[in-house]
Length: 412
Image (cartoon, rainbow, N blue to C red; front, side, top):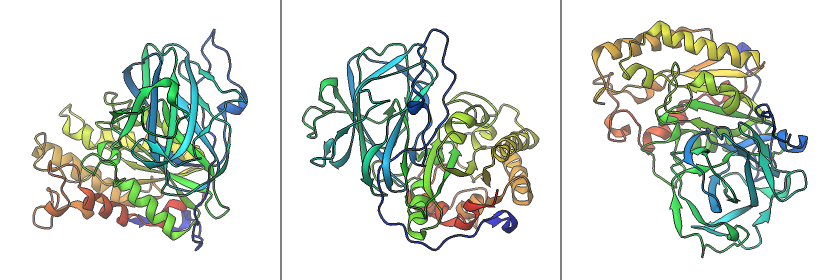
């Protein structure tokens, strides 16, 4: 990765110890007419994001459904808060029986860890259509690399549900009245998605004051990495940051499978979801942009100039928010059914721009990391997840290892 040293801060050589539970601030959409405003304590939070997943449409909500959702923390801290989303709902969403605990195994929780979450002191929250709500801080500490379990019930859910479709993590569903239990007895059905939860934040140690937010597509989302083992490239990056002990240790994964820079489809296009999914994350210090291959391989006539304009819009808006932005080159995908020489020419031109651009605070060359020395248009077989587009676990780790950690704490 090439960094712009003048835009970097020093990296503190402090080792992070396991920390605890608390959440940071995130923006919500304006309250729709006719909906009651949420208490201010549920619409804002302070701290650093320790886990996140992009919001998207998830089909129809189910009344009385219980969810036991497993998420993995990146930075430890105290005063945990959880953000619940109704971003794509067309009516208010009520949640009750909301609890947070630490997973023991499967759907079972560590004894004594499952505690109720409140919202402005209440055990129930109603989130207006298009809005989000943060829980109150939960006293106590949670370590980095913990499987946190958020349980909730949707007593009267209907209409479009909001969540994250491809979690690469097994969670559980069951009768809604059992969210307080710590055993997994009643949580016998599984789901590969996250429902209604899109961010978790903590108050970290003084050494860890910020987070990196990865904005991407299915490679960032983790497709072809091993399910339930947290081997997406942002997971590997989180472990590197935690071991380094510098000021940036939180990692938010805002990848959506199939996502594009220029057009909506599999999730809203990257610029359209930038404020909600990325810039609203508590403690966001740096945005890591890694998108573009889906625009190229869609054969819609997208040119390198089109993609470059999209990248520049994102960089401009991130910088306007006082946040750093790092970009990554587009990886090789020869062998994928949609590959052709015309698309490859666009990819090469885009990557030449990225390598020489001053629009970003740093650039990581994922193309150079992943490509075969014998056929640079193709991924190195050792790193290939099998479809010639998505890296396997080793490829994911190689990508994370290529990131210059110093560049994630630039001076702005």
